[in-house]
Amino acid sequence: MNASAPVGSRDRLAGLVVVGIGNELRRDDGIGVCIARALAGSLGALGARVVSLHQLVPELAVDLADARAVIFVDAAVDLGPGAVRVVAPAPGVGFGQATHRAEPEVLLELCAALYRKRPAAMVVSIGAADLGAGCGLSAAARRGCDRAGEVIRALAEVMVLDA
Amino acid sequence: MSEIIIEPVTRIEGHSKITVQLDDAGEVIDAHFHVTQFRGFERICIGRPIWEMPSLMARICGICPVSHLIASAKACDEILGVEIPPLARRLRRVMNLAQIVQSHALNFFHLSSADLLFGFDGDPSKRSFAGVAEAAPELARDGVALRRFGQQIIERLGGKRIHPAWVVPGGVSSPLEAAQRDAILAEVPDARARARRTLSWYKAHLAGFAEEADQFGNFPSLFMGLVHESGRAAYSDGLLKVVDANGWVLADYVDPKPYWEYLGEQVEPWSYLKSPYFKPLGYPEGLYRVGPLARLNVIDRLGTPSADAELTEYRERLGRYPQSSFHYHWARLIEIVHCIDAIEHILSEPDILDHHVRAQARVNRNEGVGVAEAPRGTLIHHYRVDDHGLVESANLVIATGHNNLAMNAAVKQVARHYIHGRDVAEGVLNRMEAAIRCFDPCLSCSTHALGQMPLVIELRAPDGAVIGEVAR
View (tube, rainbow over the protein chains, first blue to last red):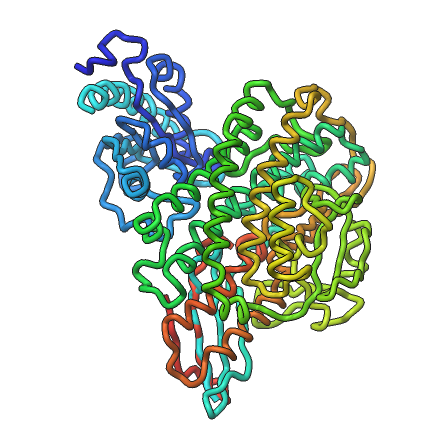
């Protein structure tokens, strides 16, 4: 148990950043943003910071430098529609020319290089069914959102305790 | 004769290539910067209602969506026939200034600083932002922080940092809240300190790049930009001024809206990027430059004390009308300082939280032109609509396009100075790219294409056959 954030504390998820990634104008690509929005109230009330982004940007490294743990939430095309996967960020290719977009691992590398800090990190992916132009999630993606929300709540507790 | 091709051009926004044509002795005959991507936003928007146009046009670019948002909204203001509330004009200006800070920081720190830190002949494996972060972490941290400063202002005002809404026909969609203002103002001192530290770093290193400053697009040209009627810088509003290399005024505080009266748009078969020129001088003699270098040449002063002190030093060292495109870098850093100061000044005004921020109206005109200064230069949106406000035609004259003739001239100058024969060193290729990078082109904007800015140099023989190619 973390001495500064005991279980039951209203700030027990302080130091956790949840990053929802996606474009809500490309239907299921917006899953990460939808989940972040849905979790902002409950996780925020426990001290977590929940942000939504169209895409990961280099300056997010500043926020990660102050975090103990980070959960990236994004749509995936290599999963069945609505399926949920939790993995550590894939190895990066270096952040050499990262400018206005970056993969999670690239962002973590940038954070480590600039601030000598690297929070614990996991990527929660949800299988997308429809990436066409338009608003609103497919039925499969909506089911995936509900499952992913439960996974993220549990993961948040574990990651902050372990961090 | 032979030709060198650089493709793709790296560390710029978009897709392009450079071709260099050599004679039989291996000397440069000609060189071109080709923009090889196409998007077509001018067609995509046909039939859309003007109420959608600012947000639709913002999708042209992930770097400078705010510029398109503002120019588009201004065109729509004219179609509505409204004078937007003065407060809305100032709030739009804050968002535009914030975008200039973040976009300039992207170009200087992420794309250009590695060349300045390691030199143009430095180890290519180090010449990246990763290399900067390793060798000069404070410089890299300043770059990340300054981008974040600008992006957070955009997010606080527009709800998100990329493709924000908020700027709408008639003004802005909601007034500023005290918490938003206070959060932005609290971050100003840190941003200002980082900007000033970077300027000092740059000025200390400038002397080491005398040859590049002499060769990177160093030629007489016209300069164009928006100027406030008092002579100070104007980014979201203002009148148009054009001066020549000696400071002679060719267009003096003219209304920018009838741009077709003084700007022609030439189309060349080797590029998707149009080649605008100043009509009174014809094509291609009407070559002009826009963006930070041009803006500092057309204004009398910036309008904030610390930036004006920097401008004075800039002019003392480089002359009143610097001609080298290398000095875009310095001009860019001075503009960052000014934009931070101007943001603070505007947000400190007592009425900044008032609620009258939008004028409501229906379609009252069938045509509108919106002009604003984007980070890279003057941006023009021109729409014609039917009586229901549905877009019938659109013409976008983009900042990067204004600089097309100048970028081609810069590439030719660098090629002639550094290339003598078919063997081209990596450092020479890098210089050709860097000359383009000075202009900070955004090809996604200017051709209406998505992508990075990879580059290829082609070497062509007199008969046009490709005899060498260098790609990254």
